[in-house]
Amino acid sequence: RPTRAGLDWPRAQAFLTQERARFTNAHPRSAALAARARDHLLFGVPLHWMNDWGTPFALHVDHASGAQVTDVDGHTLVDFCLGDTGAMFGHSPAPVADAVTRQATRGYTTMLATEDAAVVGEQLAQRFGLPVWQFAMSATDANRYIVRWLRAATGRKKILVFNGCYHGTIEDVFVDLVDGRPVQRDSLLGQVHNLLDTTVVVEFNDLAALDAALAAGDVACVLAEPVMTNIGMVLPEPGFWAEAQKIIRRHGTLLVMDETHTISTGPGGYAHAHGIAADALVLGKPVGGGVPCAVYGMSAELAARAERAKREAPPGHSGIGTTLTGNMLAMAAMRAALTEVMTPAAYGHMLALAQRLAAGLREVIARHGLPWCVTQVGARIEFQFCPTPPGNGSEADRILDGELEHLIHLGLLNRGVMITPFHNMMLVCPQTTDEHVAQLIGALDEVLTQITQKA
Ligand code: PMP
Image 1 (cartoon, rainbow, N blue to C red):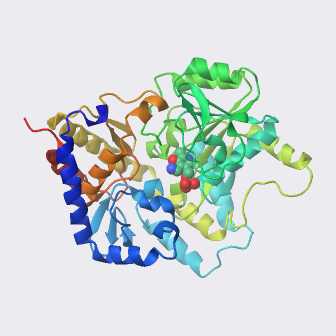
Image 2 (tube, rainbow, N blue to C red):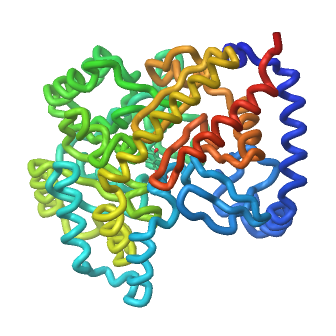
Image 3 (tube, rainbow, N blue to C red):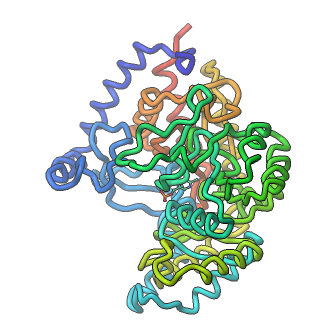
């Protein structure tokens, strides 16, 4: 496999065996808790994805703080996964912990607003340049709701996504291109509606395909990450978004930017930093400093159309929102995160350190003679098993190698460093230090020494 060029695969397999034994020996309490949970939790974990780490059994956490996670066996790990972005601003950032503590004895949920609601609305409008906002409990739900608003507002049924995308478990996006043809993603469980009727999929960075796919005038919105981050990172080619916006607008389609991961770019996200004027924006995961919540914003024009659609609809369930949406605890957490945590100063530290991490990774990869590249979007970094970054979802898919990823991740974990279990994503948070970065580089150096071909 091209992803394994420069590696000594038999040596790598032996290394994996040794690392699995090392993990097992070092984590008796995790092993015992994993065994105990097996009878009453599906797959033995609260969410079945928690088995995707590539560890011999589920690692159990005692506590997490700042850039570190301490497991139940007393090992403290430097955390570059950060809950796959939920804790992008560190675990339990102090202002959020204080706000949650204050709210803890003042009620959590009343289906009514507190003062925090108006403040958070103002903060979001200022930061992202979109005037009108709503809330959700997860990025998935924020995407589900904005798509519903947009279909209602435009009267169009279809949406367009880019091949290889991920926007949470909103069903509509699970459509892939296989040999250039759209197919429903076969991993999706329990799906009964044919998604191909209402979801159109094209390759990222393919303007001609985008233009052709929108030409019939029946697509409500393009739902996209400004940089694809969920099939490994795929950067937009220079000028892609400028041209794409013109095409989208020309066909009367609306643009939704899902900034859930690309908020790593800077305080206003990628679109704001790169002059992309979206009609709507979605942000989940870190917007409450790790407390579950999400937001979505709209242009004034779209908000007016959305309000009209609701007013003109028969009274009853809109299919948008859940009972706990916008609850008082989440609003308090978001207010603290937006005003005191996701600050320019925090980003200053994260971006500078991420730059040093990227440089360090490139150096260690080069030293081991591997044909891998390092891709960066602000505080988010990834090493990819190819010499130059992939240009679209199909190319990115071809260079994923789950076995190799898991082997590296386990090697890093045994050396005190945790990265995201999906491909090779790393995040730098405000509490990450130069020493933490050095530890990651050193650990990767050791792992690569064990699995590469020796001259
Ligand atoms: N949008 C993007 C871009 C994501 O990466 C994810 C999760 N990885 C989601 C939405 C969904 O987030 P959640 O699982 O918190 O709903």
